[in-house]
Length: 475
Image 1 (tube, one colour):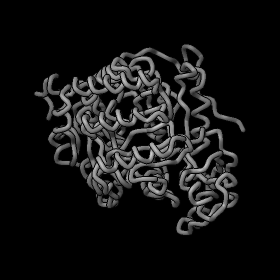
Image 2 (image 1 turned 90 degrees about the vertical axis):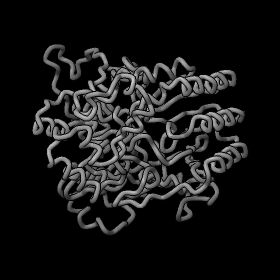
Image 3 (image 1 turned 90 degrees about the horizontal axis):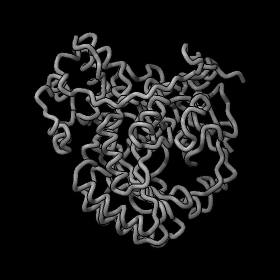
Image 4 (image 1 turned 135 degrees about the vertical axis):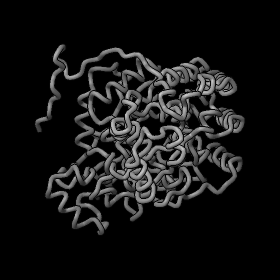
C-alpha cells in the first residue's frame, strides 16, 4: 500500500525540520483575572489549587469578556450533553491555552477554540462529532480494569505488573480520561463509581496481595493522580512497597508534573521524594515518574524545573505517556515538536502515545490504527532511538500493543484484530475467557472511529450500531 509522504521542508528538503526552541512560560498577567498575580503566588502550589477553574463563572472571572458568549454557551452545552469529566483546570494549564492570542474578543475566542490544549482540557459541544459522538462499542470502563481488580483499586492485568489506584481524584481533569468511570465527580452524563474502602485499608489489602504474589515485580502507583495523595500517606505506602523483595520497578503516575508542577516543586515533597529514592537506590529498585503531556505548549520552564527536581532527588527517569488525539498532536510535526521539547528541554523521556481509548463521547479525539501506523513511521529517525516514543493501542481484554502488531485488519469496517501471549490474573483464576475459551487462542477486536471509514464501512456501522454482535474473525 502506498503511504502519503509529507511535503519536504523548503530549506532542508526533509519532511520535518528540527529547530531548537527554548521553553516559555506564558505571561499569566495577560488575562484580566490574573493581572495582579505575583510570581510568588504563581509558583505556590496551594494558590494554584485554590484558583482552579471549575465552572463557567470561574472561567469568566479569569478571562472575562475576552471570550464571547458563544464560547460560554458551547461549554455549558457540552457539560449538559456530553462531558464525561467535570471541569477542573489549574491556572498552570489554563495559562498555556492561546498564549499569543490577540486581546480582541472575537479573535481571542477563535484562537481559544482552535487551541490544542483547550481541545482536551476544556471541550465544548462543537468539538464532538455530530453523527458519531461515541463508537457503538464504547464503554465507560473501556479497558475493563475494574473487572481485573484483585483487591479494590489493584488491577492485575499482566503477569508481572499491577496497577495500584490509590485515589480517584486529580488536580486537573482531562476530557479524554480513560478512567472516566471512576475518576472525578459525577457529570450530567456519568454517575461515577466510587472507591469504598478507606485509603489505609485499601493500601493494606494491596500490600498483602503483593506479599502473597511474588511473581509481580513491577508496580504502577496511580489513581487519579498521586499529587492528590497526602505526601506522608504516599511516602509510607512507597516505603512499605520497597520492603517487598519481589518488587523491582515502581512507577509513579502524575500528570501534575505538567498540569501542576508547583506541587512537585514544594520543598517538603522534593525532600520526601529524595528519601524514597534513596531507599530505592539501596535496594536497586528502579523508581520512575510518569507524566502526561499531549502538546508542546503545555511544556513550560516550570515543567522542566519540576522534572529536573525529581531527577535531582534521585528518581531514575521522568517519562511521558501521552494520548494520540486528532486536533491536538496527530501529525508528525506536532508529535516531534512535543518530543523534542520533552527530551531536549525538559529532561522528560518520550515513552508512549496511546490511541485514545473507546470511552463515550470521545470519537472526535480518536485516530484510526492505520493513521497511527503512518505516524509511527513518520517520526522514526529524528529522535534518539531510546527517546523515540512507541505508539500503542490498548486493546480491551488484552493490553498494550504496538500499533504495527495487529494480526488482521478490516479497513472498510475499521476492525483490527490482536492476539496476546499471557493470561490476566482473572483469566487464570477462571480458567479461561468469558466463554470458557483460552484467551491465547482468541483474536481480540479493536475499532477505528466510524467517521474515518469509507462510506461502505459507515453504512455497515449505521446498520449495526445497536446490535453488539461479535465481529467476524474475533475468535
